Amino acid sequence: MGLELIIMVGAPCAGKTTFAKTHYPGHYLVNLDSIHELLAQKGSHRYDWWDRDFARTIEKHMVCKRLSLGISIVVDNTPNVLREERAKYMPFAYHYGAVPIAVYFPPNRHLCVERN
Image 1 (cartoon, rainbow, N blue to C red):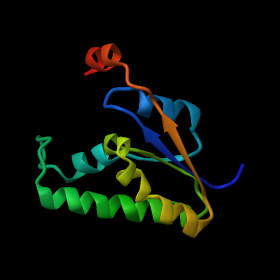
Image 2 (image 1 turned 120 degrees about the vertical axis):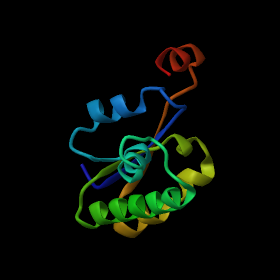
Image 3 (image 1 turned 90 degrees about the vertical axis):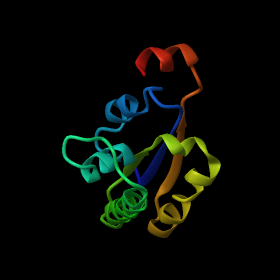
């Protein structure tokens, strides 16, 4: 198996993270929510707009660093439902010779409401 950059695509609570951990255990998982939690004030899940930009910078660095080391990666972010958001990762995949793969989770309103 070659180098892969897998992008999870789907609504919040669609099962993207669980699927990624189950089906790609050898891949490094990057999740903006986890980065935001690291940047949030202790005891709070709140972060300001500066942190959002900073979180994206951290995410970009993590993706590029892992790919440069030959480590396949899964990007698991809710904003990936937008084509523009997914397109931001393509230059990284091409630069490092990774195969870009999108894993799509069709909307399931009942499931999302139940899990959220």
